[in-house]
Image (tube, rainbow, N blue to C red):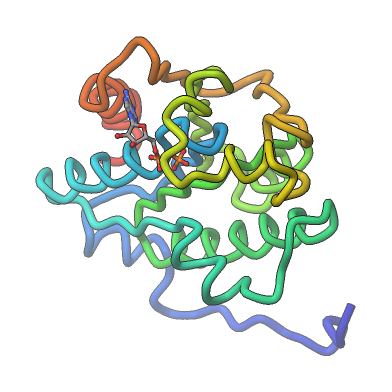
Length: 198
Ligand code: ADP
């Protein structure tokens, strides 16, 4: 566990409270969870655009900027998935402290890992959105061709095929991308968080 017993965190003068006065926004972590192809990245992108247009400073953490960089040493075993989420949560925690509205777009299939994220950032800062879409529909979309590969056995432990997706038992919000348009889902999320971020 390293030498954490010899670490003494400083109380910084410029703290979250002062930064909040400067940015005039209240940080929150919007955690999008759902199957591959359910629409997390699409919704996250549009939500970030909407936040930007409304004068909010945000940052989007997704597979592209995390799996390729910070977490490039991690695979998809249960242990690595847990470490992936732990690091994402810790980065989110720093970004929240910096005053940003953070959006994460990761499958995050396990209740345990979502609970870990919630604990690490404190539950009042955590807003879980279940991006709901059936496996059949996601497979039909197959945006990245991954379902095809998983069916062919070229990818192991693929969520929805040979690895489970645990439906969030207590999400703050559910969007249904089979029934809603992208902008309807984005509006729903923006409406739900708008009082929390000001
Ligand atoms: P994920 O990030 O969850 O893997 P993506 O956002 O990459 O999913 O892909 C979702 C695909 O589904 C995109 O091609 C998107 O255009 C399409 N799509 C169709 N309807 C919706 C909707 N209502 N919400 C989000 N995405 C949708």
